[in-house]
Image (cartoon, rainbow over all chains, first blue to last red; front, side, top):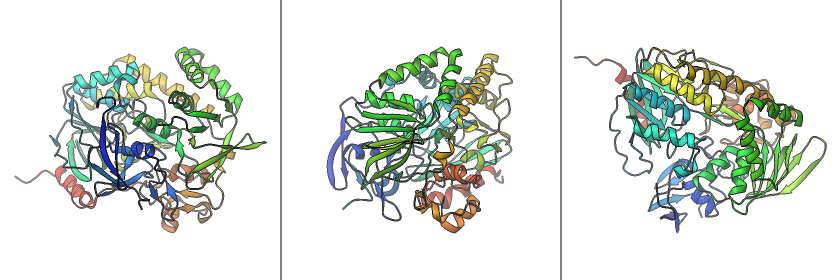
Length: 87
Length: 446
């Protein structure tokens, strides 16, 4: 269990930020103010719905692996995350 | 307990063993109780779970001091047991043959074949969603979904939140969001007031539950709690801005940042159905020993129908003991299971969905979120299979887990059959692991 207050450094859509250790990528992105995790096949913005790995709405690219479910992956130091809404 | 947690995408190590006596899929209450029971019989057991840690949804935590005492007790029993626990692992396929099971598991994009003599399916449940205009907007969460995100560390402080759906999850969700600093504007339950009242009165034999409900209600005492009201639409631009609520006569629109919605739970039966286990009314069929219709494959907890943590713990223990070769289980455990299963029936009746809620989707409302299929593209005369073929509804990454239950409700379509892999996997897993699983069940030539 990470210490309370411990943080890790991640790069989210090109932004280097520190986020609480032990949280998930989904949670970290929501707290960074990311609204669209991905665009649907017709281009509408999508974000986490189920929070438990069922709906696949929160999928993002993590360290070069596409389509990872952000709600099932814990943040790690040095992790690079790219959302489907990245500039 | 041997903890083997490899959540990150980097450098996954191979599993320390690929052959045990029993594999348990799911580390919620049912899976934990099953694993402890198997280990206590002196058998080797491997527990696999997709989450970050053990506990499932109900005992999800970042810090063990925040879970109920009963959860801490079970976590401690699991820790002290010889069970091997591996989190961050998805089971995507399996093969079985008389007395042998091989599961295909994926961890961080890499496929593994894990073998055992027996399998226990403790895959829990997911939320039931009903499509309505605007339900795809960012800011619309499941009720359990918001709870899960809150427990992952998401901040809801200062957010203006509406909770509108159905079922006993509403009260604890409202209480925990209020405690986390959310500004709750409304908590609405679609079930009519008399049904909720009857249900509450029926709880007199379970005073602990009444006390718990009262504590939850107190935690969001400043917010109206309305029965017989439901959400009809959500509006916004790049995210949710407002929600429209009705009681069937009057409607009103309330500005908010977050809507938590959901209509009870749906058993996760994909793995059991893939194994060929019989289901009835959307739930896995088991005998008194928790064995499914496939010999050597057992199931416990919510996949058998939604019944809560007491049923899950008892069924897990029974499944674990019999899977490990025990010839009997304590009568008290069987009684606990039967009591909890009987209580679950009252719950289902109280929170039955009103027809208005089933019919909320409009012609242009997206019903399949993965493939953006609108309601108007579907013909009620079709089957779920035909909808897949003609519109791709149910063929996206969630494989119909969200829209399947919704369409079952709207059109009465039975769920389509499941096909492997039951979750999207990497190409290397598809190419190598299933054949390796098949080969592992074939006795090799001397």
